[in-house]
Length: 429
Image (cartoon, rainbow, N blue to C red; front, side, top):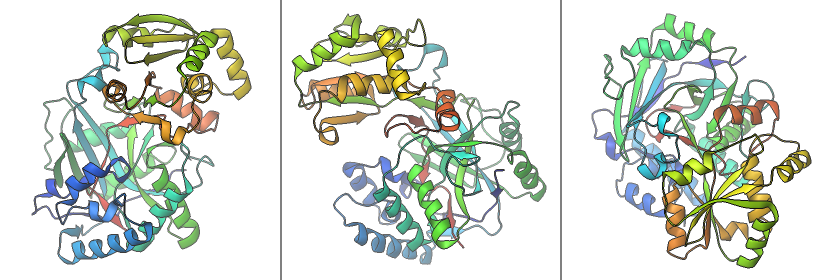
C-alpha cells in the first residue's frame, strides 16, 4: 500500500521576484551554472547545492546558515494548512534533442502535471516503491546530512505510476479547469509561477479535505518508480532508519503522459587504441549505414529494428556518422550470460565497445544529454569517438525495476521534465 499525506508546503514568498530565487536540481548544476545562480544572494542554490570546490563539511554549515537567513527574512514562508499540490511544468525541447524522438511524438511545447505529496518511505524494491539506477554512498550521505541539518526537503523526488483509467490525472485537470494543450490556461491561479531556463514551473494547492481523502484512497494500490532523485530517496530511507522520519516529498506523474519524456545519455570516449576499437567493431558488428551528414536519416536508421535482438549503436568518429548493427546470435548469448532482457543496448555498448578499450572510464568517458554536445566534444578533439543510443521505454524501466529487480548503471536514463529547487519544499517536523 502506498501511503500518502498532505503537508504544509514551504514556498518562496510570492511577493518577491521568485524567477531569480529558484534553480535547477542540485545534481544537474555544473560550475558555470552555479556561478550564474549564486550571484543572487537569496537564490535557493545557496542551500541546496554544494559548490564544486567547497568541502562537504563546510557546505552543510553554509547551507544551514543560509536557510535560517531566508526563513528569518521571510524569503521562505510556510503555508497555513496541510494540502496536496499540483506541480505543472511547461517546457520545450531543443531541436538537437527533439530529433531523437519519432516525428509523430514530437510537440512544439510539452506540459506535464504531477501530484506533490508526502509518501511513506519503504525499502526500495521491497513492496510498492522501486528505483532503477545505482547510487553512490558518498552522495547519499551528503543528502542525508543536508536534510538532517536543515530539516527540510527542498524539491520533490520525481516518480511515475501507471493508471489505466487516468483517474488521478483527470481529477487534477478537472480541479484546474483546463485541458492541457499548449495554449490552454487553467481557471485557477497558481500559488507559484516561475520561469527557469525557458521552462515555466507552476504550483497549485488542493486544500479541500474531501478531495484529499479521495486522492489518498485512489493512489493507495499503486506501484511507483523513481525517475529522478535516487540519492534523495536513499537519504530519506536513512533518515527513517536513523531519525524516525517516516515520509518524504514526491511528485507523482502518470507514465502514459505524453509530456513525460525518456531519453538516452550518449557517450564520448578518448585515450584508446583506434585499431583496437576497429577490431571490436569487426568482431561483433556490421556497419548498417554511413554518412558524413548528421540528419534525420541517422536516427531513422538507428531506430530501425527488425527483431528484439536487432541492436543498433550510433557512432561518430569526427569524419562520418555510422550505424553499427550487432550480431544477433552474439546478442542472444550476451543476454543468457547476464540473464536480463532490458537495457540490451547499454550492455552491448559497454561490454563490447567501451569497456574493452578504455582503461580509465571515470576520466575517459563523458556522458552527454544532448547529441550535439557529444558531437561537439569530438569535433573539438576533446574526445575521439561518440556513441549514440536509442531511448528506453517507460515500460522497459518498469520491467527492470519490478520484474527483473535490477538497476541500470548511472546515466542510463534521462527523464524530462526536471523539477526545480525552491518551487515546493517541506519543513520536516
